[in-house]
Figure (cartoon, rainbow, N blue to C red):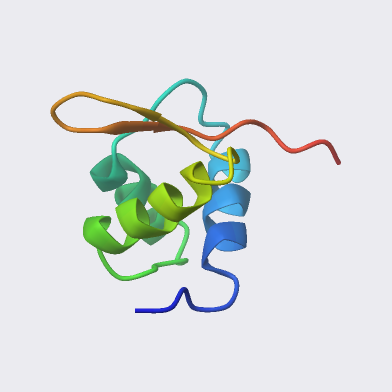
Length: 76
């Protein structure tokens, strides 16, 4: 499935608005998205979007059970 336009940006925006530091699981990120009315579907979808961005170095994936994700703060 191709990434829908703007999903990564929505995730970044919500993480900034929530002032989320450190690492989060896809489920935790999905919960934050729902709290901010910016759903992207499911924790699996969040993991897919972040995993693809990890391939380009934009996201750090911390191996474990479950995986955790670290998204660097944007420079505005």
